[in-house]
Length: 155
Image (tube, rainbow, N blue to C red; front, side, top):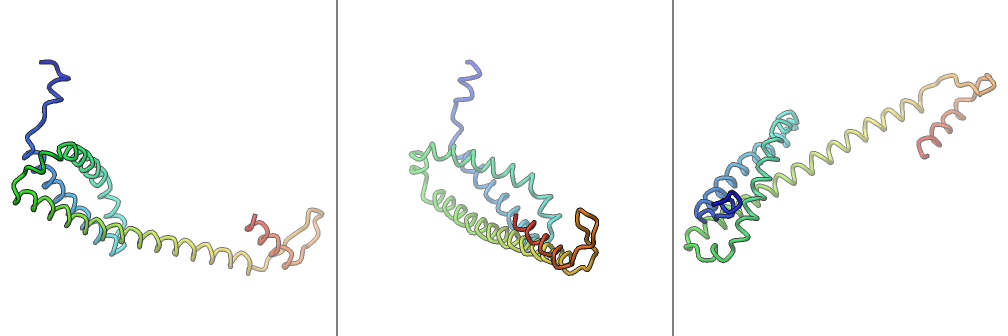
């Protein structure tokens, strides 16, 4: 048997179901940790979770694609197994939704912080009284330099 044919052999459906249930549980736990860290603004902890999150997301995608190709077989699963799978997927969807909300909240919060910093910097530059000179070396009025700064910001 060649290597190409060996890789085409299907795994038992029960193995794929077990794998995805385990992954859903692990991935959900990781997302819960990330969500808690986001709510505490512990971005160092969030950052440490990212490699595992990317790896689990890829594994999840691969398993979902593999299982979607086996829809007919899944329909033949016993009712208990199908219910467990639906319940796990529904719980994971809720955890994922909470995580996405926390990520969006953190993103908006970061935007507001950056905006405040930039506004304070602009105000400081505009409010500072400084001597400005024209290209001819003459002192320039303060209001003219402020106008120049405003034009530069808009451009």
